[in-house]
Image (tube, rainbow, N blue to C red; front, side, top):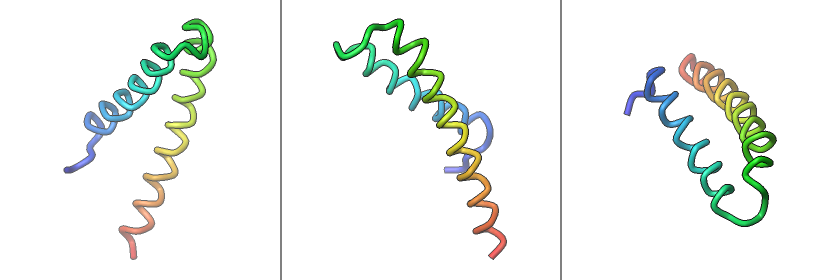
Length: 63
């Protein structure tokens, strides 16, 4: 499976949506807390990990 930009963006959004949906469905936090605090932090963390993963893949491809 080739990860081009649309595929990567789709998988990224799917993973975030599953995590947010699970937290909304669970009676741990209010929906407002999940959407205003947890979801943005999940997105920022995911983008950081994606950037590190891309750089690691570029490094591995050179060797």
